[in-house]
Image 1 (cartoon, rainbow, N blue to C red):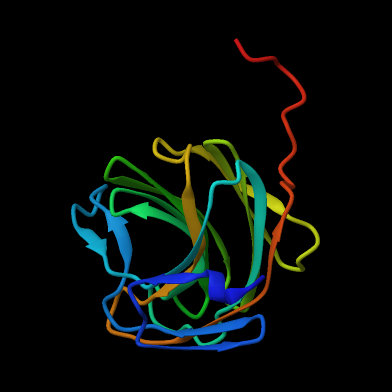
Image 2 (image 1 turned 120 degrees about the vertical axis):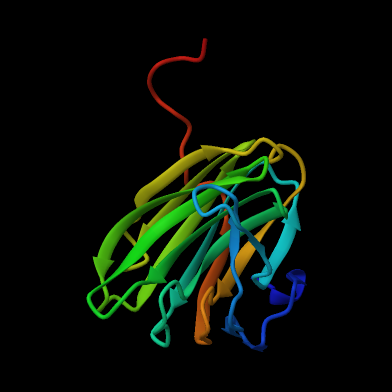
Length: 199
C-alpha cells in the first residue's frame, strides 16, 4: 500500500514511515471511547487513515506491540468516521499475565467492547478488516494466514465514503512504540453469506 494515501486525524507524539512500515509513539492519556459504562468521552487518539468509496474490500495489517507495558496500551485497526461513529480492533495490555484482544463499535456516540483474554507473551497480531457495503467484519490472526472472526457489525454512517487505517494510544500515563507492517488492500475476503436468504 502507498502510505502517502494515508492522512492523520490527530498526530501522535512521534512517528516514522519506512517503506511499508509505520511506527507510532503514543502520548499519555490518549484514547478512543464514548460514554458506555465509564461515562467519559475520550476522543484524542492519533489515527492514520485513507479514504475510499469502494463497497467491497479487505484491509490487512500486522501489529507489533512488544513495547506496550502500561494498562490499556493498545494499537490496531480503526475506521474513524467522526467522534460518535467509529470502530477499532486491538490488543490492550493489562498486566504481566494477560491482555485483552478485543473490538469496539461506536454508533451514535455509544461504545461497546467485546474482549477475550490472551497471554501477555503474545506481542504481535494480524488484523483483517473487511467491508460489504455498510456491514463490516473484523478478524485476527497470530500468523497472518489463518484468521478468526472477532466481530461482524453494522455502521449506521458506514454506507458511503469511509476512512480506515491504524491507530495507537495510551489511555493512562504511559507511552510506547507501536509498529505496523505488511499492510495490504485487497478484494473482499469476507465472502457473501451462503445460507438463510434475506427477508
